Length: 467
Image (cartoon, rainbow, N blue to C red; front, side, top):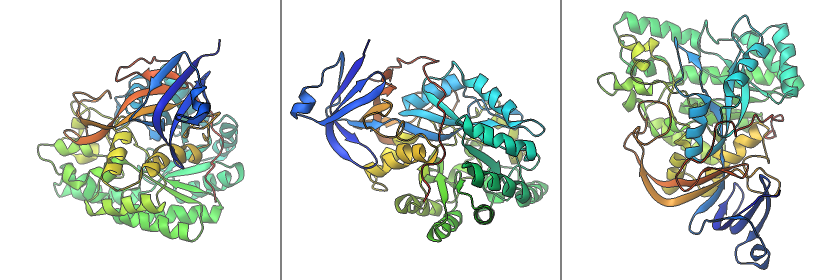
């Protein structure tokens, strides 16, 4: 039986257009759009009609960087795939791309199978996977080809975390050379982890143990140096490169230079770097531990360069790097030693609202909001136009967004499984009202109407954003 939904009277905002239009949904996909009030729109009929008058009708957000149930630092991220995808839906995100992890001594397949088992049957929204590559060898390189055939087309490497995820320059080069052949995209955590470990050891020896020293030892110059090195290794390999969670103005400068040279080099930043700073890391009574993440928060003056990078397209994507750890019992593992604080912040529920606030504040345009949060992440990771836009044939992942509603962000009202909000008390304008995932209501007028298991694994094609 054909099931139709009609969204009437809203302002449809995509990365390329803004138009008052009615949207017809049929069998989970967008069937047609027509300008509101025209004969074509008047001819639309449906069993379910949603009135979006005075609201935005936007594509569901694509968060290309989350870590649900990630084991890290002797503990585990506090959001499961069930709680995390539900919270994502509350925040207007309808697709996440999470990271499956290869442990040293194990195969990519083992890591991917483990993450499939965590996610399958538990997600409220659609999901895909990147693969963290921790052990580059001949077998790993062959497996990369096989994963691409299965729709896992991006591979993350770390220049940080020696002894855990770290890859040396030779391993990175080999993986990049393979991706140049098979079409995969290498994602890079660009920080000089070897040098940082020296600075950590020296800081602790001086008795500098508070959370704020986490930011002081992970120096912006060491992010910039690693970014530069990753770019040049990718250039040698003839491979595209995507640098995750860019936080420092010096790293943005490296990306901008590479792009000016015509290289396929891309950068992602996150809301925490746009809205928070080392002032948060320095909060007294160990409160700063709530804001420990890597790359670290930077002094406020870096924010203007990040916003500029988003406007000039030197940075293309805003993802969350959602990796929540509760303050009580998890962040507290690092009392007396900042290096033992689990690295990560909650944010999957906050991204779309914070970026709408950036529209209100004049940092970016409405269409750029949709571009960096929906369309470009979908194109970057091979999900477009199935995800990331509102067009005939696309999945009906749609958010009815009230641009005038005001809210105060708080742990008391958010839906992430974590005991604090990184944005506690922040007032924002704009709020999700209704969310459809493949035409099915997940949030209906501020009530959760979704279910675990609706979300499906979504294979991806290779990067659609190359020059």
